[in-house]
Amino acid sequence: MERNLIEETKEQLLTIADTLYQGGVSDGIAAMNAVIPNLALIADGIEDETVQQKLIADALTPILAAMESEDGTLMADLITYELVELLDSL
Image (cartoon, rainbow, N blue to C red; front, side, top):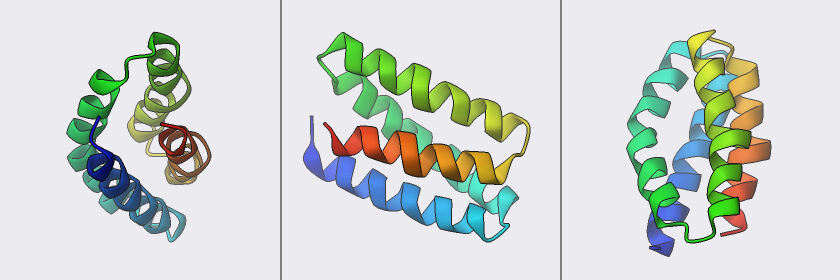
């Protein structure tokens, strides 16, 4: 898996989280939609199925639910404390 893609995606995610924490929910959701293809590539590149399932179950699924309910704070928390930490472990 390409390390540059992970690092670039993490930077984008942290920027999105900052936007969400500042109340820019619609901007954060739009930016998150742009990052999802990168996250799909990263998930596909994970060889350990347990880690791949953790990414989907603990981070991506709850983030999509938060996006649907337009809960910016929850999205930012999930990005910061679940998704970015999981990407750090790859």
